[in-house]
Figure 1 (cartoon, helix red, strand yellow):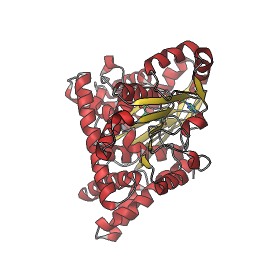
Figure 2 (tube, helix red, strand yellow):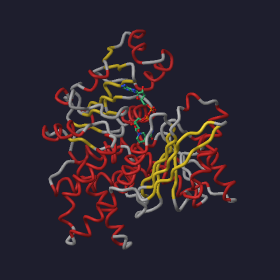
Figure 3 (cartoon, helix red, strand yellow):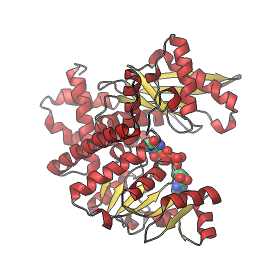
Figure 4 (cartoon, protein in one colour):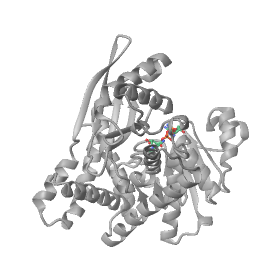
Length: 417
Ligand code: NAD
């Protein structure tokens, strides 16, 4: 079993120990946990592009709370274990955010960089054809993930609608605005993370103007988190990409830095050309800041560097950026680690808003999207914070507890267990 799947299943088993005392029928509870450890369905097939076959899957994890929801990934190193792990985490993430979905994940084992645009289109259409009998607005709602985007969702939607003979834009989210995509989806994950930050400092009584932030990663998530946090009055002192980062104790101008990065290619070049203070990615993680935001890689904080982390709080904007040993160590040290299934749930929440708008045929303004996002995320944080305080457990355990409880209660109400 691959490490990513093992870690996802271990999280569920660990949190089930806290949850167990809420259920008097232990056998029924154990059966429910076993069901959450196993996906409901795995769709398998080959996708043919100009005579070449690529292995493809769609994992549907658990739909007790609503249709399956999750991205489609095109990657040559993707695997069924990885898809199962990510589908399981999507079930937990949707439950934590309180949005009515279960988890799903699709993968095609392919290196899209080796395909022409025409081949990529065929691959997308063939994959959509493979999963058409299993997806739909009230069944399973895919979205973009690594190496897939709005254009690919548009090709897939067209294939699905041709196959089923009906308009059904709510079958896919992450679509271009012209085809029913939502305002605010591009910024949603970073924006959601900043709403978690606002709720956290309010709960802890921390003054905003004393907070410093270091962010690893300057892609979709890291960039918008940096830009929005900085506009909200937080001092972002360091950001990085894969070449390293820029550090300034006095605070960075994110828009200016973004322009410089576009001009020179990466932060290492920006540092040289503009004579800025350069930090490696290792150094960035060790900076003495209030909040460290890993927004790039899995396992960025691990047993090799955990003792050097000086931040007071970690906000997991990437998926799985803290390994289990580091997580345990930081908890013992009293560092709050705000888990990925809460911090980066803004993305899937605005995907949910896209689905709601498609089903209604009525479209929201950016203001309305952000107002609803703030309400949803703040409630998720407050629910978790209450559990953390009453049960004296970490934010991660509290989030997993809440998610599992919501899924298991839905399964029990349906009489599945
Ligand atoms: P992205 O590809 O847009 O950006 C990734 C960033 O990480 C880039 O700035 C890249 O330079 C940097 N990076 C790559 N290798 C690095 C290294 N070795 N050291 C430091 N930085 C490095 O990706 P993204 O969409 O911003 O996603 C980032 C993370 O957030 C991923 O874990 C992803 O699964 C997660 N996530 C994304 C979304 C979303 O809506 N985009 C939603 C939920 C979770």
